[in-house]
Amino acid sequence: MLRKGVTNSVLSNSIINHSRVLSVRPYSNGKDISFGASARDKMLAGVNKIADAVQVTLGPKGRNVVIQKPYGPPQITKDGVTVAKHVDLEDNAEDIGAQLVKNVANRTNDAAGDGTTTATILTRAIFSEGCKRVAGGMNPMDLRRGINLAVDQVIENLKKITKKIETFDEVRQVATISANNDAAIGELLAKAFEEVGNNGTVTVKEGNTLVDDFEATHGMSFDNGYISPAFITDTKTKKAIFEDPLVLLSEKKISNGQAILPILEKVAQSRKSLVIIAENVDSDALATLILNRLRGGLKVAVVKAPMFGQQRKEFLQDMAVLLGGRVYREEFGEKLEDITLEDLGTAKSIEITSDNTTIVEGAGSEDSINTRVAEINEALANSTSEYDKEKLSDRKAKLVGGVAVVRIGGASEVEVSEKKDRVVDALNATKAALEEGIVPGGGSALLWASRHITVKGENFDQDQGIDIVKAACRIPIKTIANNAGVEGSVIVGEIEKAESHSIGYNAQTGKIVDLIKDGVIDPTKVVRMALLDAASVSSLMITTESLVVDSPKEDAPAAPMGGGMGGMGGMGGMGF
Image (cartoon, rainbow, N blue to C red; front, side):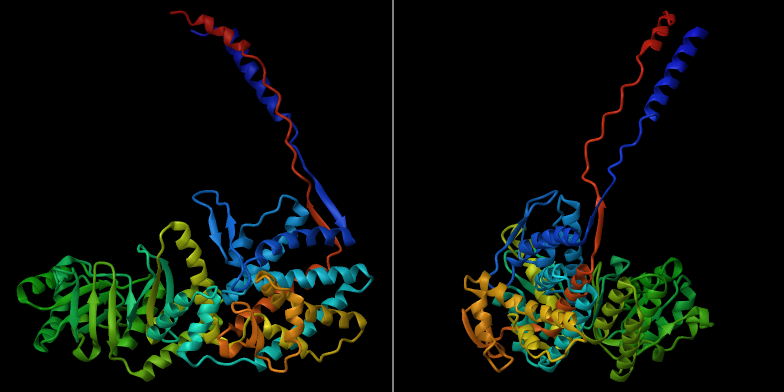
């Protein structure tokens, strides 16, 4: 038994040790504050570092960047935004500049899916020239106004030379250029878009083979399959395949076997098969269907409707429009026993696996489908959630187009990852081109548009802001030429002599040619968003007058050791 004095000694030591630890003052780093030219120069140093890392990837002869990853093998990529995302500088002041450029690249990537390298070097060009002029005594706010005036006119000039995509070759050319002049990728993506149409969905996944391929599905496809293997019609492929089936759509779960018998009898009399797509089918209803399938010979299958809540209801309404039927809704007082064959939809064929259902050529009218698509487009325009936009776009694609999955092959994980980055860029660029059209590529569209700036500022400083944009629009061509091993300034000088907007530098062949005829083209949306995002952020950076960052971290002093273990001496009282 512990002695009272020993217990107090232990407690006393514990309290003393605890108070000693709490008495250590938390270590504080404080803040570093810079002003004026010093603040801007520190930010510019960070901007230069990230821009130098990214710009080497620009153009068909641009190089790759190797990125260390916290796990797995290093990543080799030629994608500007991927490089930018991995840049974190040790100096906090420089890192602010790098993070702002990273923000530009991310915004351009989110809006257009490509053009991130161009946006990065444009940001550096505008900011660096702006810093020089502010250091020379010009007003940064007027410089920013001049930059915005010039950018607005450049975008208007880009619209004037935009050409809508009309042919398969133009789709292929856009995809090829964005994939670093990889003709095989361009051909693959062009075929995918040709299969599913302009409104179809094309996605990119990593494959398990050495070669690239794609699989296209016409009609509507979703991820849920049959709820019981008893519905399989082809035992070899484990699929339930129906030709010209009737389709019953239900928002609610179906459990009553007696309620479903009347529609089963009507379907059997029509000598057709039946597919039920509902929230769920269970209990007596499921047993009745399986019994009729196995003993009665009725071709029937049950599929759970995908998604949840309101999204599932909207999806079932889409299905009703596509199939030419209507959705059974118990909440409206409808009874399952009263459903007629006219309420059911139909399709040319339906193929169901354990985890996927594909509906081909639904019987819905074109007018009703177009009306439904218009409703989805309106919802897309009003939505502010990226998740909702993605789901709405997916619903639209299932109604009016098809779905193609491009699978990327390669001999190693590193090769597949590098190629996938380029394919995703090419896919996004192709979507942007289909949306807004194309302009001559290789940076020549920006140069031509900047040469035709006629707007004047209200004062000398605003005119200087306009000149900053004119100079920045020369940078993409110079960088592409420099990466190809030639003097960029000479190439720019040669192109500026041309009168046609389509004349530019083809870095792949090393010649100044008609870029439209040679297939060197860029999506208008990509070029527009790159300039818009770069000018928006860099012009604000020019107006910086003070910079507040965390002071460099130092190792905190070690906490003092606690009191000794003297209190343990009382353990002697624990005799055995």
